[in-house]
Image (tube, rainbow, N blue to C red; front, side):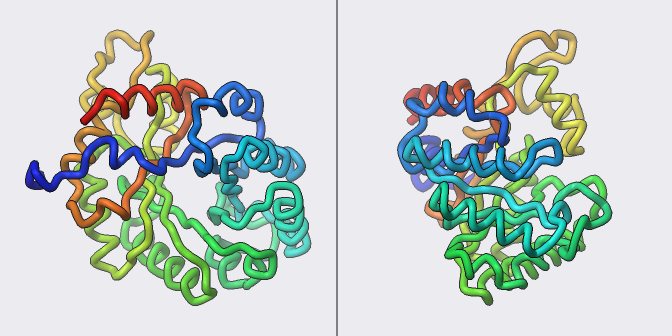
Length: 287
């Protein structure tokens, strides 16, 4: 726990937050956009059940509402360098994109020439299309299929590669529920010489059943652990749960030196509008 006089406030932690949507979430964006501050970063995912035109249209919709689109690039889903170039060209032309998040992606076998996100970063292709900001993934609570040592090595290699190519780097994390693990992870990032902005993944308000389903799918926490952190009972799964406790605890526990370097990235499991409204209301109610 940090000194109360120096502690980061909840309002400070909520500044410059980012959101995540899928290519199919454009109707939700239309509903929510008036509740989202202009310029807010909105990540557009790269899912296997969506195609390139859908992703590009979603990024264009984000830009049309004076928000900042941050499309994901899933390395192992790309079938060729030509496909990557066409995607980037369309994103720049239709959505004025200059920031992306590069991830490895779910497929175990690459569909094309990129075995992982590092291969995309080192290719140099991003810079050719005016990309200046590159996000990479982080896992404060670990990954169910990857050893912690390998995760740390990958994070270090990717951060160095982004800097070597001349891009600004940020780290966007998987959502989680354990602030203690997050604080330890932040310290580990800094100990490895990575001075990037860290966007800590937080589940927005959502139905309890849905929250538990996503947590199980991504292997980030046990149901009992989530219930304890979020303050609901496993005997009643019909309600909704929000990240009130998580955000308060994270603000209280973060070192003051991270005041300008740590932000929140909301996974909108309960919808963009519900998440944006929760952020506005919670921020206004907290000191």
